[in-house]
Amino acid sequence: MTDHVLVDQRRHGVVLVRPLARSLVLAAVGVVGFRLGWPASVAGGVLLVAAAGYALAAVVRWDRTQVVLTSETLFVRHGLLRRDAASIRLDRVQAIELRQSIPGRVLGYGTLVAGDLEITAVPRARDVVALAQRH
Image (cartoon, rainbow, N blue to C red; front, side, top):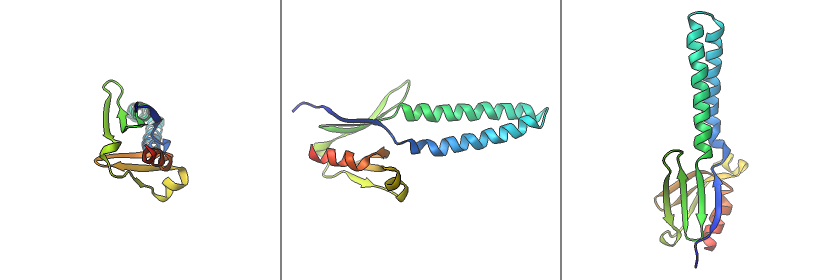
């Protein structure tokens, strides 16, 4: 049997909520500092730049993280300059566990646990588990 890709997707966008909220708070404090005038305006400007950098880093991290299910393997791959991956062969796991919180059920994401591999915020996690169990 040849190994073919069944699922190749990013993690659910919900992973961006916390870092973008932090960036928004940091930016709000930066705006206040900026409007206070010298010397607080320098600190405010620095905070605005830091907020933008933090938000950009979170989006790039989200964009460069992939959840991949093939007919033989489940893995997560992440990184921009250095690509890291963690994987598990499906024939080596007895079951893939699905964990879903109430927000996860409402928004359609969950955590997959297969042996030592745990992947959070997987979109349509129930479908991924069903596909994995068929192969």
